[in-house]
Length: 114
Length: 112
View 1 (cartoon, rainbow over the protein chains, first blue to last red):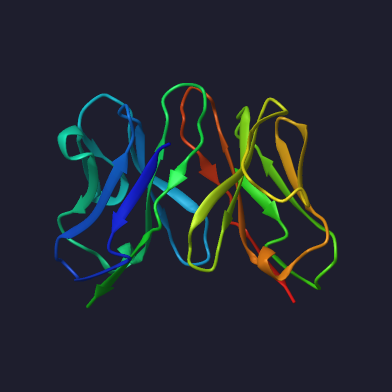
View 2 (cartoon, rainbow over the protein chains, first blue to last red):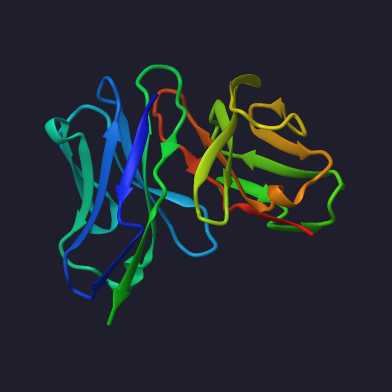
């Protein structure tokens, strides 16, 4: 069974600082990996996804994530945080093949201080 | 025009009642999902339909019954509501080849 672990339920950064949200996965074969963002009282929006092409994936709003098979990690980064980045971030994994079941991590709440 | 729309947005009801949540997608996708997000923000898949056929059915009480009248709709009916059913329920859809799920804004269910 696949699983996702997000280290840190809450990350706080200053505006303009580096954002680093950690995600590790457990899977017998490299799965598809995703980062979703949830703004308050809204649904989830896809930030980026890794399928099997480049290991460095660029997403929306200046975010990117690097797939590291040796570390089974898919950490999300952004060089400079903006106040509008404050939200809940979810890492998710799905198996390759026709079953597109998404398994989510427990989420990381990002707060951005002025 | 909203891609994945859910109604109602809020639902407050008494224990023991039966309620339904509707979901519609106008993206032309062939797969739809229901997720439950609990008070700690944990998201867990409940059901998935592909071309009106049930393909994922997680360990969910049989009080929950999904119904897909066509590819664009997936409704969730809940019988005999319990306090523990209080949560935010999200509908999502995807096109099989793309493997990206698009989420609705959620339905906040409160059982009193």
